[in-house]
Length: 269
Image (cartoon, rainbow, N blue to C red):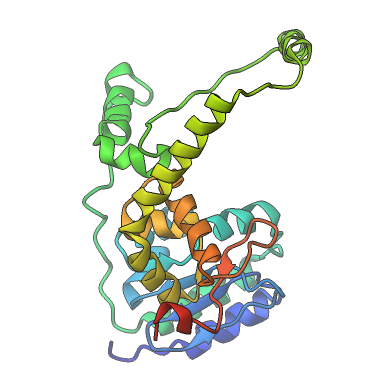
C-alpha cells in the first residue's frame, strides 16, 4: 500500500499502552509484543483496511467490521475473553486518542474508506418498534443449524434458567437429600462404550488438529472449532487427544495448550 508505514502506530501503541497482555502482528511482518508473562492472544492485522474500518467507526463497531471482513484475525478467542475480563487499560485522554489516530492514518497509507460488511444489518424504521426489532432478531438468529452446532455441539442442547434465592435453596436441599450417586456395572459399561465411541469420532480429524496445533504453536477447543468447523464437545476431545499423544502440553489455568517441541513419535515435521 503506497505510503503505508506501521512504525509510528507501533510507537504510539507501545507508549500509550505500556502494559499489554496481547500481541499485535501487522501485515508487513512487524509486531508489537505482549508485555505479559502469559503472552495472551495475538491479533493479526491483515491489511491497512482494518485500520480504515477502525478510523471510519472508532470503537467496537469499527473493530467488529474489521473482524467480520477478515481484516483482523484472532488466534485464541478464549484468551481474548480473559483479556476483556481481566485487563484494565489505562485511561486515554484526547491527546492520546489523537496520537493513536494519527499513527493509524500513517500506517494505512492511501487506503480508501472500506464499505460496511454485507452481513451487517442496517435497521430502519422507528426505534424499538415491533417490526424493526423483529427484523433484528431474524437477522441474528435465523441461521443454519450448522452455525449453532459450532457453539452447542452435535447434541444441540441449550438451557438456561433464573432462580430466586428461595428456589435455589430448595433445589440444593433436594440434591443434598439424594446423596452421592450410585452406579451399577451396567451403567459403567455404557459410559465406557460412549467414551470409546467419542474417541473414535475424533480420530478422522486428528491429523488436521495436529496441523492446526503446528501452525499456531498452540491449540484450544475454540481454535479447533473455528478451523475445523466442529462443535465444542468434539473439539475438546481432540484437544485432550493431542495432549495424550504428546502433541501439546497440559493446560495451565484453562489457557491454551502449547505445542511441544518434540513431535517425532507422530512423524510430524
